[in-house]
Image 1 (cartoon, rainbow, N blue to C red):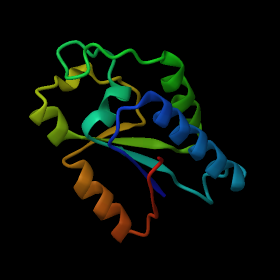
Image 2 (cartoon, one colour; image 1 turned 180 degrees about the vertical axis):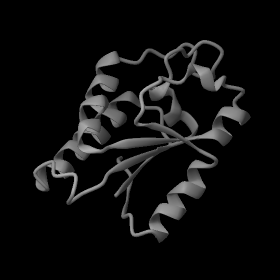
Image 3 (cartoon, rainbow, N blue to C red; image 1 turned 180 degrees about the horizontal axis):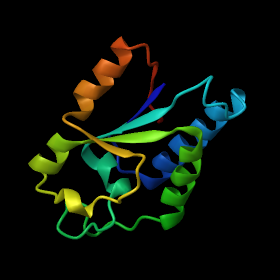
Length: 127
């Protein structure tokens, strides 16, 4: 299942994390039975950046516990696919991205959403 993250509201991101945890719990966190990914573009990228300076979200405050909660899900195979087009169009240095191995760059977030659906991934959007 892919979770579409193109919004910047921290409370909504927190709800997305809760929903993913609930989703995993139904499958008893068994990575052989379920695969969840987040596809992030637009404002959704900000949750995966170490440094917001020089970005459109430079004045935003993000509770670091949100990322810790997301990181907790990654031991169950959760990955985040980050849109390179957003980096380019918003002039965001890709080096500002956190360095965790579960973060992957994709050429286009929207194209990745469509591609994953053709591969059998269900689509979910929180909010």
